Length: 403
Image (cartoon, rainbow, N blue to C red; front, top):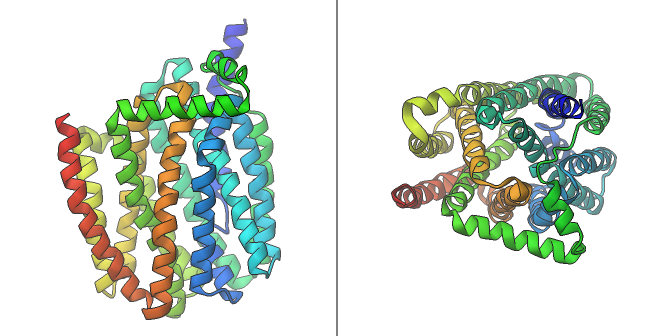
């Protein structure tokens, strides 16, 4: 009876995770916060600093929060993350002070840290405990589809509301939806696959447990260099995608576009991501893992040059949605297959930490050059950097697949 109850609860995590993602991605601020702060008088440099501080915080806090998820539970970590995010939304909406916005971004980063690896670890370990982890790639495709569909609705509805009703009706519904997601998280069930390791580490005390978990997780990466390769290069690609996502919004706004028009383009890119993520496992059957890892960055490089040098930058941005969905689903599946459950959230924190490091370095630089010389030159700089990095990527890909 207990086993049946346990199985039923673990199975419910999968459907509840779909609903959770649907709620968390239905955030009307996600495509507008940069425009919102820009219209309040914050400069591109200040916005770059805010985003840089966000990623500096995530860089510092990723491993500690990943360890929280591994030692004290994925459910608790995700729950704390959502509560903190709700607080950060309030700060962003009501504060006119750069200092308070800075504090808000730090809080947001900690909330993001607590959620980032915990939710995925909760889902994958639930499936692993049920013996159906081979279905994860398809499930991840559905997750990405839900995420991007929520993005489509958020971009279009949020843009429409911002133009016609004002930003109050962008933020308040987003806060209410966040509150519902908090209640949903509380109903989820913690997998027990790592309970013995959790008990062993907890006996050591907080400081020693963190040190041991970090050391053992680093050992996993060292013994499996393909994990490091996937993390280092996939997160570099996602950094380029994120920079384009945010700075193109302010670029289009400066060229006379309104929030609704921008939302439509962002929604179209999200639709591309949703479709490619959903069909990712079929694409992999045709071109293989190596094919995906070579094709996605090549298409990104071409798209970045299209954005930098043509008048149809919005079309090339929509194409980047294909890269985002395809690569995200593929990489997360590859990584989770290689990572032991008892180290999963911590190693996945290394992934988020790497992304944060890239954003700390590149995102403010793009804003600086955009303020000084124009965002057109920043996009050219991104394209040049991406082209150079693609050369290194090819070399490392060949080396990794020979081992």
